[in-house]
Image: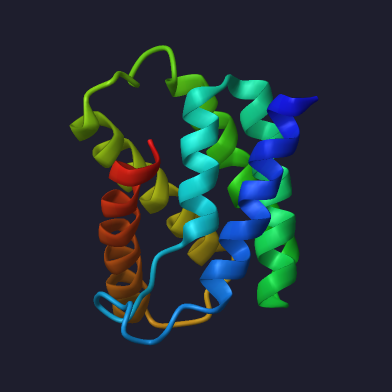
Amino acid sequence: MKDKVIPILCLLAAAGVQANLPEGFHILGSGPDLVLVVLIAFSLAGDASNGVILGFVAGLVEGSSVGTSLGSFIITRTLVGFIAGLTTNTLFSENPIVSVFTAAWLTLLSECMFVIANPASTFFEAFRRIVGECVWNSLLSLILI
C-alpha cells in the first residue's frame, strides 16, 4: 500500500508545482512536465504493473489540472508508465546518463502520442514544444532518478 500512496502523493505535488511555475521556466516555449518526470522516475523504479497504475493516475491528475483532453492524458501517460516499467530491467542502471536519455525518449514518445491524439498546433510549434520539454525533463531526471 505504501509503495502506491507515496508516488501518488508525489504526482499530486508535482501537478501543484507545475501549475504554479512562472513563465521564466521555459525552454523553446515549453516548460517542464513535472508530472511526467515523476511518473517516469517511479515507473523506472518499479515494474510494468506499477507503471500502468501510476500512469493512469498521472494522466488523471494532469488532465484534471489542465482541464482539457483528459482521455488523451490518461492513455498517453498509462502507456508511458507501462513502457517505463518494462524498460526497468533492460535499460535502467545507476548511470545518470541512462536516466537522462530514458527520460528524453519517454517524453518524446508521450508527447508525440499526445500530439497525434490532439493535433492542436502546427507541426513546427509542436516540434519546438516537444524538444523543449524533452530538454527540461531530461535535466530534471538527474535530480529525481
